Image (tube, rainbow, N blue to C red; front, side):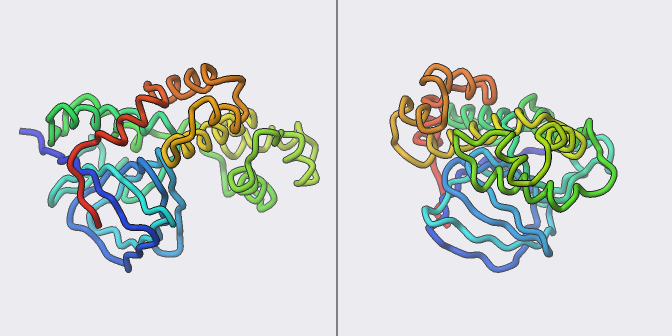
Amino acid sequence: MPPLLHLFIDDYRAAARQAAHEHDSLHFSVVLRGGLTETVGRTTEHAGPLSVVVKDAGVRHANAWGADGARLARLSLPKGTMDALVDDPARAVAWRWTREPLVARPFLRLIERRQRGTQAFAADDGDLLDLVAAFTARRTHEPQGAPPVWLSETIDRLRDEWRPELTGAALAHSAHVHPVYLARCVRRWYGRGLGDLLRHERLRHAMHAVANSPTRLSLVAQDCGYADEAHLCRDVRRALGATPGRYRRLLETAGPRTTV
């Protein structure tokens, strides 16, 4: 009989902190609202709405919650590890955050099923298989070595300072390189186009507003540089399989939750 993973909804208080600790269970978590930072060793990840993490049993980590707290959905395999879910132990991931909406997509389907009464999911459940596969798939683009410092700083600037009018040319100018050279380097080291990264940031900022504020969707679309609300809805549906309105309803009706 395949192992069962249980789904919980956890609310975390504003500005709360958790000192370094570890769990004896495998956890998958998705941020539904708010934000946090998580530190493992010398690496710190910043996570907002739709960020997803896998964290194996025994991974020592510390957390700091944002000014507005956070709401997370958490899948837990008691006394289990990632090895129990994969076909090849070499593909098991101990700890990894991703901000790809396509990884959040099967997680949101599991939350919707929880609303209908399902509290636990077998390891061979189709949506759970999709989630595990997203974390264990081999990356199609594996650059040799780390990106140059100037490129890493440019990508950080894109994520930290994104605004609707930000263009690839403006990023290239701030990095003192030609736009075509920047686009070529982005594809080489990040495996996607510069335009894709800009659109991804637009979507990320829009979903942050959808999750963390009651702002009307038409205003969210305007503030994030979409042509109109319909354009925003198409973009979100393509990424998540759900409209922004449906995502907001999911946040409010996710079911019983625990406050930490």
